[in-house]
Each structure stands twice: as C-alpha cells, then as structure tokens.
Length: 118
Image (cartoon, rainbow, N blue to C red; front, top):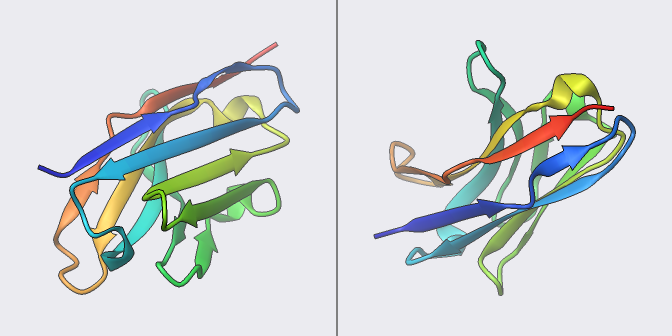
C-alpha cells in the first residue's frame, strides 16, 4: 500500500514562511510526478505546484515567485517552501503522486492545515 504523509503545516503570520514535506513509501518515487494541491473552506481543490522526476516544475499563477517545490529522490520526499504567505493561502494542503505513464494512478496524502493570520 502506497503511503504519502504530509507534514509541516501550522499557523503563521502574514509575510511568514512554512515548509511542507511529503514523505512517500512503497512506491517507485522516480516514476511519479509529485504535486501539491490545496483546498480552502467552501472551495474546490486547486493545483499549487508540480515537479517531475527530472526536476521540471510548474506553478499556479497565484504562487509564482513565493512558493518553491522540490524533491529529494534519495529520500522519496517532496517539499513545498512557502514564503511571503498571505491570508488567502489559508487551506488544507495535500501532496499528490501521479504516475508519469499510467496517469490514472494517483495517490494523495492526508493533508496538512496551513493558516495564515495575524
């Protein structure tokens, strides 16, 4: 059974930073595009950023220049460094793993709450 474990969320003031981590197990990490999504109360889940096994990244416009996605293929872990946080970044953040070839194979982490408030 594939496991994705999200961590690193918390309460932070506007302008602050957080680093999310997603540790994976029981999967061939390099076969997956890893991503972070978020879901705010009353809203649909939305893409934040993705990264391929080769390190190519893609970001939603609303996080460009503030968030950085990275992966450590040796540790089977993906990260999301979030800087200059805004109240509108408040959401539950979910890690996602999508197989590069069999794209309907998808796994999700349990989510980690990020709250940006003064």
